[in-house]
Image (cartoon, rainbow, N blue to C red):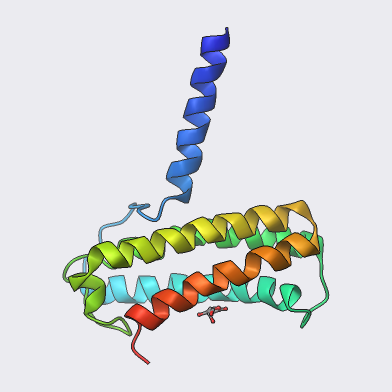
Amino acid sequence: MQLKSLATAVLALSAALVGASASADTLKFGKSEDAVKYRQSSLFVMSQHFGSLGAMANGRAEFNADLAKQNGAVLETIAALPWQAFGAGTEGGKTKPEAWSQKAKFDEHANKFVAEAGKLAAAAKTGDLAQLKAAFGPAAQTCKACHDAFRNR
Ligand code: ASC
């Protein structure tokens, strides 16, 4: 009985971790341009949901707990997606070559962002503006750090 609930808990935890991993790898891209389009599109959609949370966190928009919760959930889901579209042979777009030549560092940035996006989504779920505010800055910092290192201006 206890062992069974432990096993269930472990399974649920692994599922949660897989869901939050930056290596969600559900696609093979036929063409390099498709990978570029995919990562730009998913990053764009993500930025819109992230921006909505930022507007509430920074007081540019009225806080709406329901909206924050929904945007957090979408953000967390999409946060796992772009990274699979930076595979070998897909160099280009706005990304510096260092994303491929320093792949371990790139992956570390992506993983940090995914972790912070998860924390931001969790904060949004609480319905507490103070928690949203506290989680937003560190998440935005992980966007910026990766852009500074790996995105062309
Ligand atoms: C956004 C967005 C980014 C990040 C970055 C955070 O909303 O589109 O690229 O936040 O500005 O520093």
